Image (cartoon, rainbow, N blue to C red):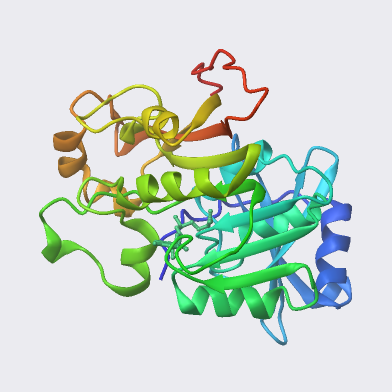
Length: 311
Ligand SMILES: C[S@@+](CC[C@H](N)C(=O)[O-])C[C@H]1O[C@@H](n2cnc3c(N)ncnc32)[C@H](O)[C@@H]1O
């Protein structure tokens, strides 16, 4: 259903704290769980483990981030996060605050993470009914996670939020509709003819639903244009400014193209002629951008933005 990079081969023992966390989450003794390293961005990216209880095939993804450990129940051992993992270090939660994970995917990656960081009330929302049903079932025990099936914020979550995380589908469909997958894959990966349809609609809606000085953490491929334009569309920074938000920081992570992107490389080169897709042998590299933006408020000051590549 979802194309994820494969986990690399690994022979190191699982860190005891993650082994313990996974077994407690699964409610099993250590010997009853099989562990697999999950490093979708290679050894320099985040490392996670998928632990599966072999008798029931119930699975949990565990990882360390700084001093904290985190766990997510998975609807199936093969359903794992992709680029959304790269956003986790930039999600900062004020204890007790309201958080919205918009387009939360099949297990509420950012919503569950925010709850773990101390959010008071979390809404996980997605247009895909089966994802919402999975998240509802997997987070049953966490009474302060609410799930909503909605097209972005239309008829969805009520009230205002201190933080919204948003990792929308951003692959362009171009004109080549025949090749566009249907169902889950269409919704998961594709963001309209030029890739920005869901992203730009989302930005306008998020701005209206953040508290003054509230923060949005937005993830998308760099070629769409965070602050710099690589095609003809307005950038994310321009869209945010129009909606009353300011970009505080932009971070970039170098990533290898996944097969679903590589299949559309010709179209991407045509739509984003200013972008340097970096071919190295069989691999094409590009970057994933994490945009941290703040809704203007009484004390809003524009801080200098940083586009300095961190990797
Ligand atoms: C790239 S995935 C990100 C999933 C998850 N947030 C993560 O980071 O792993 C995009 C998600 O947005 C959802 N989505 C697509 N269009 C949407 C819309 N109009 N409203 C709400 N969710 C949408 C998809 O179903 C999918 O779960």
